[in-house]
Image 1 (cartoon, rainbow, N blue to C red):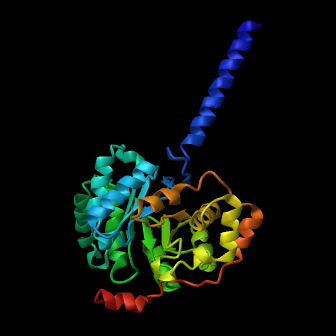
Image 2: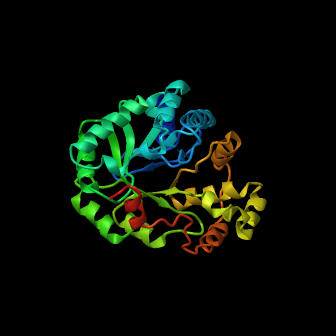
Amino acid sequence: MKKKIFTGLVVLASMICSTSFAQDIYKTAAGVPMVQLNNGILMPQFGLGTFLQPSDEVCEQSCLTALKAGYRHIDTAHAYNDEAGVGRAVKASGIPREEIWITSKLWQTEYGEGKTLKAIDEMLERMQLDYIDLLYVHQPVGDFVGAWRDMEKAVAMGKVRALGISNFDANDEVFNRIMEAATIKPAVLQMECHPYAQRLAVREKAKTHNIQVECWFPLGGAMSNGALFKDPTIMEIAKAHGKTAAQVILRWHIQEGFSVIPGASNPDYIEENIDIFDFTLTDDEMAEMRGLNKERRFFNMSLSDVERMVGL
């Protein structure tokens, strides 16, 4: 009888340990949830965006502050001119490389079969990394199909783990072109998204293809002049939870299932932004947040404007 009881306890303990481990793999060390991409890879749902960092050196410090605060996802791009700073921060942090998710993006001048593979090698060299976790085509202009073919080769070579499309919400034509051409389907779609521009139609399209939505300008960006922070509904919800408007907005993103990458260089804001995993918005509060949608974007550069900008 005692033997049976002991055996039962061992089995129970084993089940508890197994369950705990299974849960732990879906969160980073700081309790940030992981999302599973359509290729089976887990990605931290929350990260630091490095767009408009004042300099490469400031970016390095911002990333170090973020990593110390528990961030494990950093989003950069060749066009941001701060990839080297990101790479230095990863190395200086002392955190194992496999625990940090690094995203970057190819600029349009790097698109094209043969050309893009070389650009990926140069990107790895800038960041002093052996691989990139997620690689985007930054804008849907130029030879992005040729770029995608080389990106798929980079995945086969172990230089990239997942592929994404940035700003392919521009129109159905560019989205359909990449979906038809891709052998490896996009795992993530990155676009502007926040409570005033909830992008319902694009989200439905992404859902059809099991593509994770990742939001840039989740707090509205500098062009919004802090409009979201002044919204009475958001302010009231923030007051109820003893949180800031920014924290409520980011919490809404998380509960909607988005991946979210707020940008910041101020250490206080970096630490504030990740402090969102100790509270939950109620169903009623989520409904109030969804009711704020105006499909009003703050960044309104057209695709033709982008093409002119890069000389295409």
